[in-house]
Length: 233
Image (cartoon, rainbow, N blue to C red; front, side, top):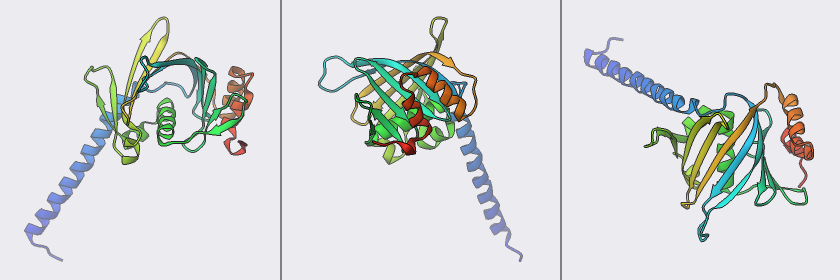
């Protein structure tokens, strides 16, 4: 079939525009991935300390807490608070997250903000660049030292206005990761993670064994990460 020259030019122009849009999207993703790469942990299993400060409406000073954590790409995250109260949060995946009550029993975490934060935080520690590129607009902050993530989906916007990441390194603390979250209500939370120890291990079983070493008095927490489907609440 012979098409007029004008039709061929129209088809060729459309193909050029389509290819150009694909290339532009790929370049944009590459730029966003480059911004994220330096923030992500270099290992898949590590532990450390954290400090969290949260501004709460109606309170004259922010709430401050601190504790320790263990993260494994194969298991999930244990986030244990020491002060001002004892609490442990077990983040397994987007659907299985638990709070450890004072009596040792478990309660499922619910709520949009809790779901979003557990999902975002675990994926940050895991270094899941594809997730952040799909869910957020990523840009360099005005201070040129931080990366700002702005949610793009309506669901994410229900819980978060923006997230800001920054990383520094010192001789005393090693690498410190800073996470600032502004939620949908305008409430700010600041988390700093430091004293990071990496573990050169592979596989779920070795990760489970390392978890048991770190939490020898709470090995049941490690079991929850390993087999969340067996949890009885």
